[in-house]
Structure formats: C-alpha cells, structure tokens
Amino acid sequence: MHIRGDHAELVVGGRLDVRSAADARTALHSAVDAGHGDLVLDLTALDSWDATGLGVIMGAHRRAGRCGRRLVLRGVPPQMQRLLVATRLHRILAVEGGLAAETVPRV
Image 1 (cartoon, one colour):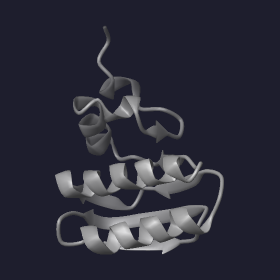
Image 2 (spheres, rainbow, N blue to C red; image 1 turned 30 degrees about the vertical axis):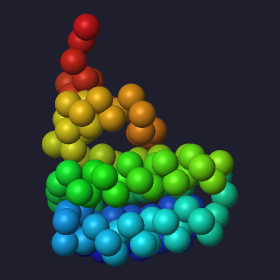
Image 3 (cartoon, one colour; image 1 turned 180 degrees about the horizontal axis):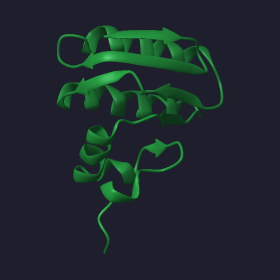
C-alpha cells in the first residue's frame, strides 16, 4: 500500500488491508487534521481492500466530520463499489460522481 498527496487530496494504491491499516490510518488522520474543506481520497490505483481497510476509511470519514471536513472518494473501482453498496456505506460516504448504475440495486 502507498499513499501520496497532501491535506487536500491523497492517492491510495496497492492493498488497503490489515497489514497496511496502521500506516494508512496515520496518513489519513494527519491529512484530515492538517487541512480544511474536502479531503479527496483517490482510489483509482487501489487493488483491493478488506474489512480492516474499509474500517480505516470509515474512521477517516468520522474524523473528517468531527473536524468540519468531508471525505470524498474518487475513482472507486467497480468491485469496491459493489462492497460499498452491499454494506450500504454508499449512503454514508461521499463518492465523487456517484456509483456506477450497475452497482446500485433498483428498488
């Protein structure tokens, strides 16, 4: 896993999982604490995430809210979009441009 960027936009690549969670949490929390306005998390280069990685994202989302910021996900890969829908987190997390129509079930 690698994270690069600043307090306004971070690019996450590789795997966001139990092995990389502590480093990712530290980087995300530092970025949230250092800036203001939206924090864009570009996931285009992210290969996969597990429940721990998703927990890191949710923790950063909550921390951003407490700091008066908003965490915005950009470039969420399709398989991860499906996980957001399955867990209903797509209703909580801001996803730039929304989710692909095929990932959101019709009611």
